[in-house]
Length: 606
Image (tube, rainbow, N blue to C red; front, side, top):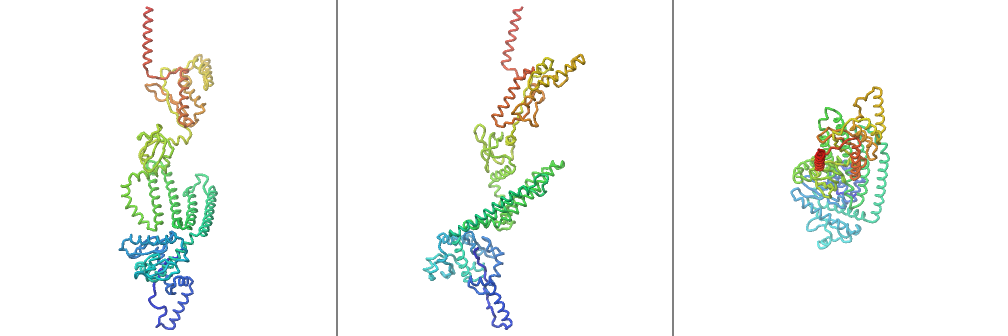
């Protein structure tokens, strides 16, 4: 890790006062000895070529500025100063400052110019043993220059042939609390180390070493995820009724996030071009994982509330699910804002204030986009539609398969190969029919009625029962019924009253159709299986077939349905039943010819 510039407060008085007493001098001498024995202070003294007192003050002040975020934030404010961090390979090298009154764009351009210079040096792959960063004086200003180590002249003409990195300003000195010359000396060391580290990280041996380490981390992550999946059957309750009140099966998936987020962070942080992404993953793994776990636990509690409210008669009239779904959205937004605030190191209140101020403008400008986005979230969360679903929406003339779903529209490929575009939010605000469940269930409903001429309905006589007893599907039952009728007539010396179930041709016909459909290979023996009478109308008595076909493909389904009703129409006359049909021109023509024939016959007879 690149060593950052720590502030040094210069000592304004000598270490040992000339007027101090011998005892005080001994005390100060012992303090100096303790300072020099401290390994951290010795390292700072050697690294920056400073005195022991200055190194001690540097070490004391370092933590204070770290707590203020000077060396961990990309930008910020400190008193009446604003600062921005100069970065190399995503790592903070050193922050530079400007007064609050100055234009912040000037500070941003200054940082960009310094970063471009450092990146140009790194791009040229210059060996850090051949170049160095030196503090110099140019035009009566303290500057940092990058030049070959063999040259030591500081003349203006020679400096112009070197890389001028930056000028140390009074604002920089106030930011760190040390004089400009001392800041220039320390800054040159820090930048020099940053360039050396950037050069080493791009060498083949360093890249190979980091690749081997990354491969090892990747193998460990895969192994950990495999172990988590293998232990799933022991961690997930096998029976739904034995769930804990706070249990949510998706909690187990958070374990993969805890494994892969930091793992990918370590991998990406090892390479120069992806250092910043890796650091972000490492810094935010705990926040993201905690937010997801909290959201899943809260969602589990809300699900329990919904189930409890739906089981209570008094609460069924209250749309609890609507309020819970709204609460879901608010909680999700809150956790997203928490993750964002952690990522950019800003207070959550500032993020919420910014979101609240900008939401009104965004809702006006991007009204359709926001409505489409929220509708898309609801469609996806509730699995209302998916690509390939067959939907019907008569309001928009849509009847076909969904071909595309985007932020603004849903495109439906109709059966006539035309395309209908439906606004995404219309699928939430308006009703539509989705046939997906029908395909997933594997059965498709057949519901059609045949209208019987009620003048053809009558009781069955013995001759009709004899004829019905020879028919397939119901012959045995008719024989048993005829036998019972004959036995009753022998014992009572008269026919039984005509009030039995099997004594009307319409009831025998219904029984026949039930037996025929039960034997049909393409009809499902599901719970909804009936042949019933509907309310009589002026068109006759409707006999409705209400069954489910096991073939959902449109063409084959229509073939099965047509076959059933073909058989139904053909078998009706065998029960002495007629299908109702309004008189046509053919009927009137036939009637007229018959009447004319009868008149002619009477005339001849007369």
